[in-house]
Length: 270
Image (cartoon, rainbow, N blue to C red; front, side, top):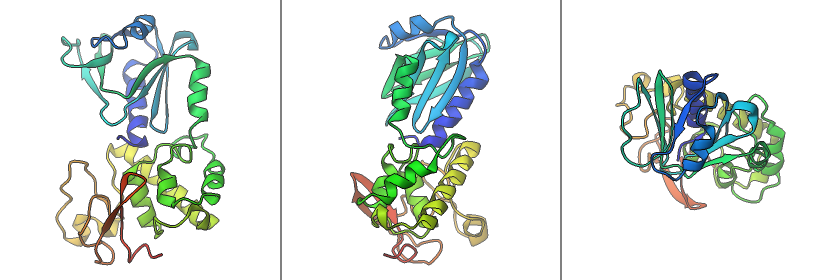
């Protein structure tokens, strides 16, 4: 599932390509035909990302397109006239300069401003947003009896963090992922929050997740670059059984909260 940096990039891409101009909207697949008809010809006035949720606002602020990509959703941007749609295109926006096709999302719905506020209210603070309040996340984590790794994937605790960012940030801070949330000190939480924000901002900039420090890049270490469809240089994510870039120990994996967890026991001692 795409993590928060991807959704913030999408918000910026939609804004750059369609913001402030009327758009043509349709739903070739048909599942969003009524919603597309209502926004067809309107001006895209706002794009917002909160965690893994994308909101596109249209003329007058009376309606928002709420998009959650889920496991399979993707957005494809093209230039020039839109070609005949191929496959299951849920929502297509277009103007004279180009088009955007949304395929396979978990959610694509037209909602009111009140409904949008209700969605956001259920989410925790997003480290990529200027209005994020880390105190809300600290209150949840410092009272949590669950493992900190499980709490970080709870979108009501911190919005936008997924499996990659949680594994990598915990490694970078030397925190055992199995520790109960309430065992973290305030200093540990502050460092973890700051690291997540910095890593996710870099993800927005680069369009991929890179988490290794300069001294652990392939060039610095004289090692081959990572070969993985996910892209990016990481410490532990999907590196089960490989040697840790820092200590040389074996990277481990285990199931936690129905997701694969990756960590280095030597660098993240209990």
